[in-house]
Image 1 (tube, one colour):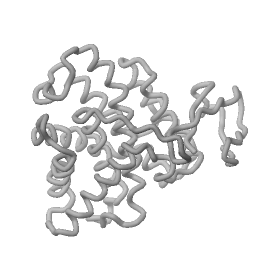
Image 2 (cartoon, helix red, strand yellow):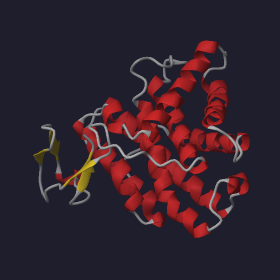
Image 3 (cartoon, rainbow, N blue to C red):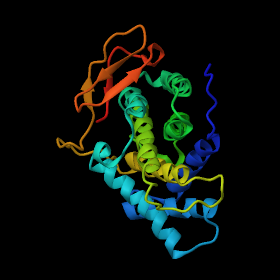
Image 4 (cartoon, rainbow, N blue to C red):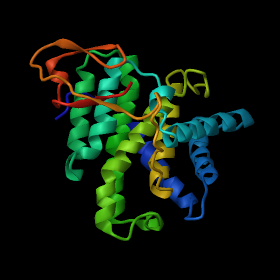
Length: 270
């Protein structure tokens, strides 16, 4: 059982409700523009009941920017997280899809618990916890959908085993969308609607919806990117039974404790 209480359960509920709204709005001939319109039509009445052209432009710009970053595989150059956050991001985006499909929920709870015990500030924890709540929610969502596809049957494989095998990938990519979206807010793409609703939360939800639905509907696969902004670089993490530090390829230093060490080898993002 996790000792960390995720403060964003409503986002997980809004994610799955949003996926329902998207599948009801789209069909096999739909385009990316149709997906973005469906996301806007879902997000706007929840967070921005007073409609304006500026709000529509801002919501859609977040969705398009997240999609571009994901498809072009530029997470590393487009998204800025610090080294301590990168450790947990590597677990979410590089290790989740390697776990047995029936154990992913346990894995995400373990990562979430370690985020809470990490000593990271609330500000640093926020995008990570948004990603884990999205991961847990979308994982359970796809388990249910594969069992009873409904309108999703138009986008799923006829072979049920293939759909089950895809769930770890779909879960991981949805979390990547959330992490990209959470980092889209510093330039003020969307103004907060209330004092307690942050730009980061809304943008993260938009990102999770865009990629969480897009990888299933359009079968997106990020392009190969061998540049500095490309995919993750593997680093062999030293076996350690206490606290210490590790200097990685680009010169940064990551400090860690033993309870961070979930696996002997992890992948960092640079």
